Image 1: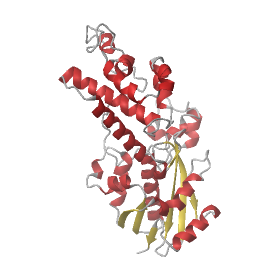
Image 2: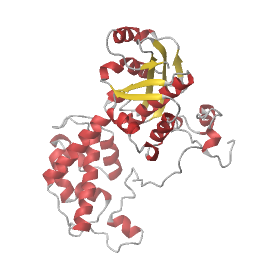
Image 3: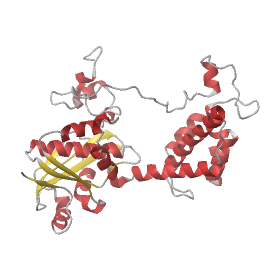
Image 4: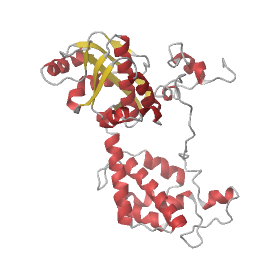
Length: 343
């Protein structure tokens, strides 16, 4: 290993990007893609903040079993049941308030397996399932996660504040949150594979007549859809600036991203890329952000979906690839995705 105590900057190129060759020499191939959706550290960044992290294996969920193990409680028992240990699985699945929710949404055909798995199997099997074979037609991992979170919240309300919640209202909240997540991470926001979690981005620079100026795409490794959209706008702005275009109309089909980057408080955002884009916007240029329907974003979408899977370099196209020429032609005679006006 070339460094005994490496810092993040040791894995960066002078250009400010990750050094994929050095990362590949040190980390397993399965780990390297995790770096590329994370922006490299920059001197202009604000100081890091502490954040709360919930262990994905639920081994650190603060049940009475865990509290007793840490010496901060003398009772292993559930406060809502007689004599039963308050384990993670009991809290999230088997305790009566939790069981009422699961009995409502878990299909009879899988109910026996659902209630017999140990905690690790139960968690991993359910958060990995994207099946929509439920009455609500929602991806099961989204519904399962929403219900688990609401079950934990209502339990804390009941134990610590003596607040009881109507199960039907709790279920309604679960469905609302799951639906919200489904809308947020719908594939039309970006090219993030729902199974692997790997993301790609693409963008197009066009003049005011709709003619091609340049295009780009790249892999961003493991990501979520919101981060992918932010990376696409970030890279598009950098490309436009480097090409000398200082009056831009930026179009995106993700209303949440438009809202985030036009918010007056972007410089204090908890999302690094939002703060970075805010810094880019302070340069000496004129920017306008506009939401557009999905149909007008297809050239950029096609670029994102044609990134070679093992190539993490920034791919730029001086000429439009053959697989999007028809889309570009239709856009010129109708709605275009992104227009760049030279000042």
